[in-house]
Length: 346
Image 1 (cartoon, one colour):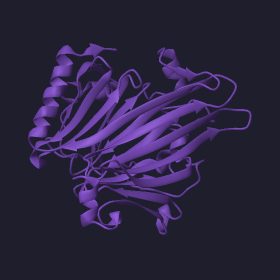
Image 2 (cartoon, one colour):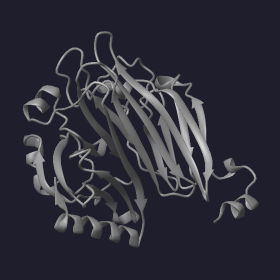
Image 3 (cartoon, one colour):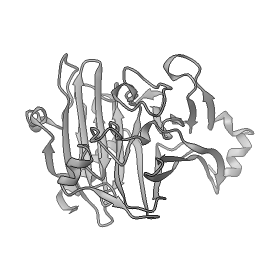
Image 4 (tube, helix red, strand yellow):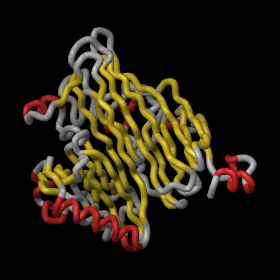
């Protein structure tokens, strides 16, 4: 519908879409700033005091995201252990460490994920016949006599859209070389994750992280019912891509006629980590594009995968996450299969 035709029907756009800000007031999450983006189809929370990461996400009212037992909490950014991992739809790992800490100064999956954003700015505006919803902010990982890394993040969607986009720019504002490790921890929960859910990726190489994953290598793509005392399994995938480096991943639940898809560039994020936890109460599928494996900085350096940023150098990354139904699911799977047959290998 053209803008003028739409505005004939709606005098205030918050009737159909908008961005709402609140401060949580109860329990662990008290004091946390949250921006809720609603485009009429997608509704998601951005946790401003957690790096502007994505908390809850619903598609047409149906929950998609995984939330851990502790949930969102309002503790200090210095608390970066397992008890501070809220899950959510996506939390950012990095910017100098991903995986277990190597030193007392490191943190599990890095410090950026518990760092509050600054200069957070929501915008809702028309651009031509498209009504856009956008939230931007800055997150700084820094220390006296240490690193000074700035993450500039913008999350964008449109009225009626089935997808959103995350655009990040990371700049090294210090005057020494800095390690640069980044993983987007995208977490899918029930009901999209359930018995029979399948992960489709155009992988040309799949590596189990450890013995627990090796035992499940033959069935890494198949999701099962929750089971008590079931160990997590982690797999590292290398994906085929098109001529521009773009690849496609899908999580498909045929019983619900719903699929989540993820598009990104393998030149920016060459590894796809799969976190498969079929454990009762910790039932989650992590689909995690990254520029490294999540094994800590020392181990990544031993593997020859440690990236760095020169003084005042920047790195830009972006990805899209959306949903498909009906015949669109078949088209997604066909595109992934075509990439696997004919796509380039990084």
